[in-house]
Length: 87
Image 1: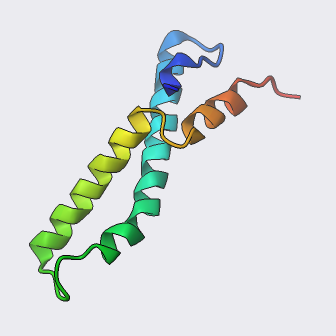
Image 2: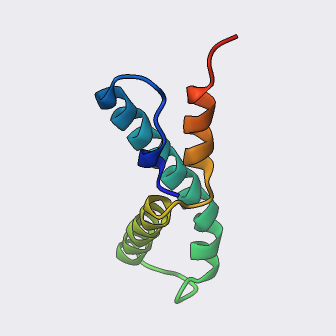
């Protein structure tokens, strides 16, 4: 599910900002979850700095792509929580 499809009842510009923040948060979370996978998939025992940088950037892009497609649903849950009226 796309997080932009869920509104909070706020102004449209604020809904867009909240949806982007929720998506960015999910991408960051996914990036952190994927780090051990990247480390275990090392191509050599001692990768150079360029390889490490490239793998890190690739992991971030992969996480962002997953988050844009709905990811784990964390972004959606964040927006739903923000949409609930305060008690």
